[in-house]
Image (cartoon, rainbow, N blue to C red; front, side, top):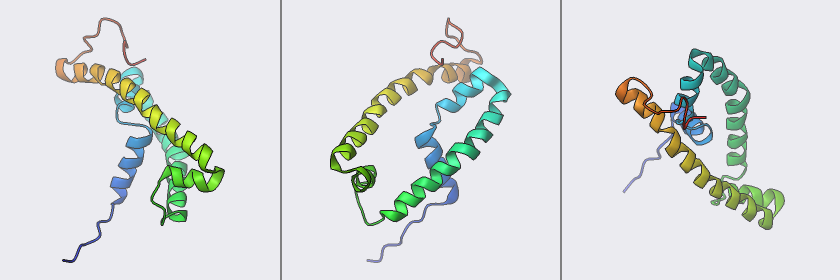
Length: 128
């Protein structure tokens, strides 16, 4: 049976980078706190952070395309196995903190979406 190779579109790649680095939970929080003045921040961060980040990840991915270990393989070739393990462990451990903060940040935008206003008793309560 012949399998077709699936290719990622440019929009899919942009959304994957944006979600993995900045996250969708931060967008409503920034807009909630700053309103339309958050738009220049988004443009600034896209130009000076996301585009260079995407180019770095593309370079690392193409340099180690035969490797199957992801960030561990990249760090193993750069700094050795000990620091590769430490760096990879810290990278995965940071996801625990990220999940807790994302779970806390989702309630204010959800409340605003459902009720038209933030029902949290403290202004900006969980967002800040």
